Length: 272
Image (cartoon, rainbow, N blue to C red):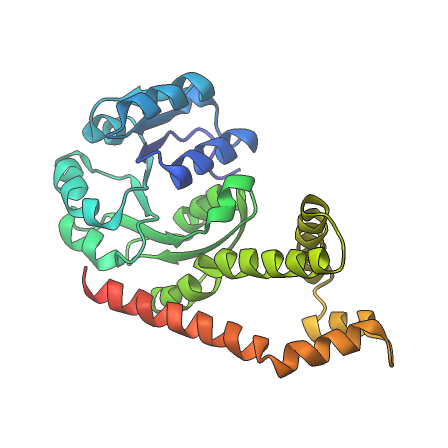
């Protein structure tokens, strides 16, 4: 295990930060005494510290001074002030940022020359250890550094390594994607309610159906179209439903949603 013996620091313990802390501990990557965390919300920080048994810090520089790996899990607009605060404390740590829309260059230009920076785009499913995360290495990052980042994010789901120029595409697909899927689950459940199912039963069946289909796609490695054909009998119920989906341009709408979200991600990135 690459991360063994390392100390991990968190600057920001919001939903994503907390999810990563819990995922790392659940996977046994490090023990609680090797995690240090800081956050402006002291009350929440103290709750997480007590619940998880980790070290809480009053200042971001304290997090940095005690850590080998530092995860920046703050809102994008807060990143410049954080970098200004920790600049003089950085020596040979790995900096992992999950701040949406903030390029690696912002970190490399505002931290000591040669700082190892990794940019990651996870998604909200990290809260249930099913995140899809894209990892992009900065110019000073080694294979071992990249392996450490992958180890952390594989503790809360699955990860891929991509060049930074593809992060906007990832944002449009898997970053925003859970919202699209939640809408699909809600719509499927509405269909069930229309046909007489009670709301809670319809929602459970819809969510489990999406979960099961996703697991089949991941675990079999079979193309989604082939899996679709496995369910679609000649003249049966499924092909009639598929015809309605195609008439409603649902596929085109989902494709366009990813493209639109990607475009917005690029716009936001240009503002940083």
